[in-house]
Length: 174
Image 1 (cartoon, rainbow, N blue to C red):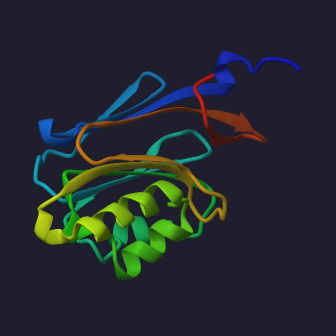
Image 2: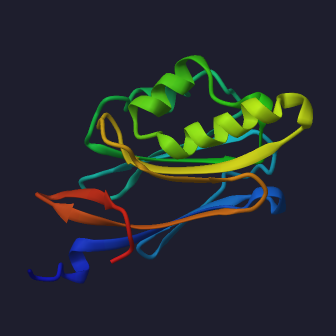
């Protein structure tokens, strides 16, 4: 088995800083900052081209039910990678409707389900919040790389590798 060359592997780190505010993404030598708001209950979507890892969409949204149109146009197109990060997401702002369907269809899985279960049992009256991160190929049925925290930051460290000319997330840093 041969090792992939460094040109075929790129490190990706996703940080959702929780109550300390903000979030950021690094991919290779590039740094993407949370888009200017430290509001609570924000969904941050970043879409990358799998051809060259360039950013094609970068949107923050306070809606827990709608997919931003800048992101929705890439739904189902496996030529793109989605990174979704939340910041201080209130239990009462869990994804519903079109947004919940979009996340489930694009890599959201067991970790988001676990966070939703905790929120359901605690109830929105408890005033709880969590942070969540997801790295996935849009339109692919397999689970993405995801994690959540109820009280602290979430850090996802992964890699993307080139397979057949397309960048593909892999579970652990190379």
